[in-house]
Length: 153
Image (cartoon, rainbow, N blue to C red; front, side, top):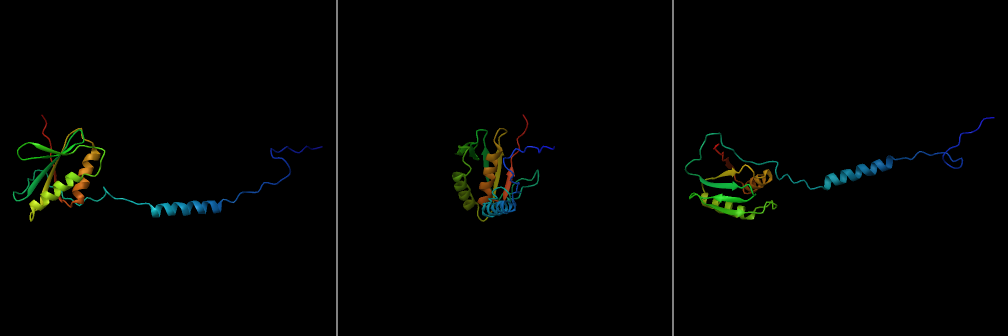
């Protein structure tokens, strides 16, 4: 006499497969909903700026603004006399209102000529702080930017 194998389930109920097609449809609908409603902020994607060729100096007519990004994430403007005016010191803040005001003042003083901005970044400065300065310049529609290279000592 044959014995029936014991199943782990009690009773003689047959197993019915679970239809998950509606669950998959709902998941895709939720995915599409979140993709469509998500805010995509291209803050650092398109910077319409012109970098000069190496070895080209600024024209004499242009007003030059020199911005220095320090190792402590401070942002300062270097003056012609050699001193510097510290504008921003908090490295955690990505919006730079004081720098924006200074750029606006320089743009008004530079009209009808364009404003040339030179950026001097110290070796230990964070990359994010440099990008914050570039975003600020892009928002103010500054198109002529030059990066200051440091000589080896």
